[in-house]
Image 1 (cartoon, rainbow, N blue to C red):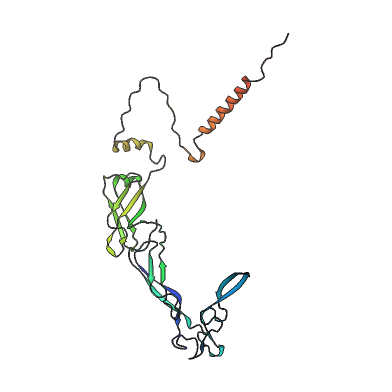
Image 2: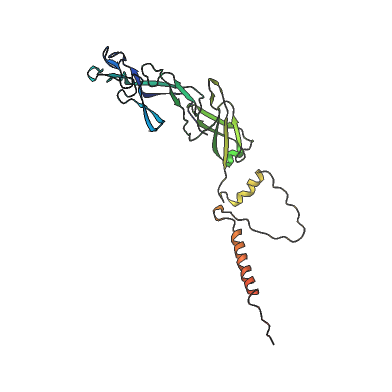
Length: 290
């Protein structure tokens, strides 16, 4: 998913061909200089027939080399000095691209009839394909926006307020009242602060904020203050009475990069089993023959 600004204008330079109306009036030379190609009879192609065997011929078609497929030839001295007999010249034109609010990735903007031109041929279109850039804060999902925000434990328990800059440069203040708890990884929504709808910019999507709660580091508080903190927090669950013998274990931190260690223990167990099996199944005692 990607994000985009709501509105902008950009200017691009395109190269297109235009009929030369000021020099040869799209004829390629002075009046009467254009002659039909005698080699291809004005068709622009040559047809050659070659006999392969008695009663078997092959017909081939190729572009006429005398007129380059145009069907017309112009004497070099009579050619237009501006277009060199090609009937068209190249020009640079500035196109102003208007990107409407709410347009999405992959959407097309078409400039009708602005592609290459040639005499007697309908010009094509210039089609621009929009590509959204990734944003460092927001991720787009249709008309909705998503972002992640980090808060501390005291903010998650006691309420908070923070400000961020929206895509349209507005400063948005987000408030969350005290007493409402923010759980790690939970998502809250701000209605109407997403992307504007295409061709209906007054209707907007929603902004979804995912909260990353940062817990304090180990031993961040004096041990003497832990009891006071515990009195302020909700009470612990009651420990159930266990009948019979119990065994205490120590809870340690887990490093996912080192693995669980179960495989090593199983390998050690398998090695010892192999040694025992080899010692018990060694060469047997043979009975003596009388």
